[in-house]
Length: 200
Image (cartoon, rainbow, N blue to C red; front, side, top):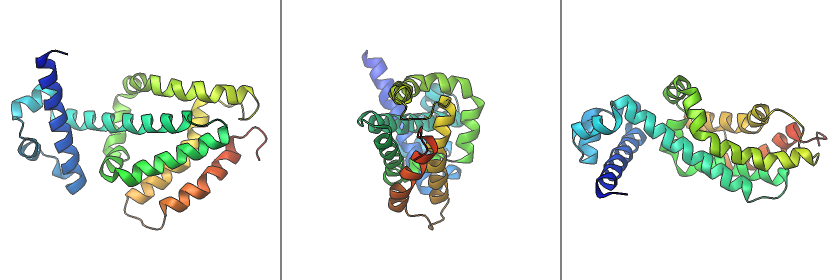
């Protein structure tokens, strides 16, 4: 990497880190051009040079943290042997992400993040393909072995992650009637029953 590329990467990181701090403190309304440039110490021109707009910055921030969440899930999944253990690991990793990175988790699960990612659906999916492929490579032998029901990958993803995302959104919305540790204990077995080949 050239010195110029390195400086550009450092500048991008400063802007992204500042945007996340502001989002964590005040929500999206707190992420203004003035606040980001003041907090990061980076010029307005640099913000527009690297991200094109404030919305471009927020899109990049959402993609960064969505990617980190997916990487955490893959790491948890691929460190296990059986599908049942994999489900427990994925649920635990997802809920740990919500607990350990509340600002980033709130951003990733926000309605505006949904709109941004849906607007660039195929592009985002393509960028996430290596992670999705890693999950598919892990699950396919368990399907072949008769451990997991032979369902299309998108349906398996929905059955596994759907309940976890719902719990995360509920918790992040400010509702405190769901305990993340309790959810991490209860959900894996319930999810496992929905995807196991014998339903047990």
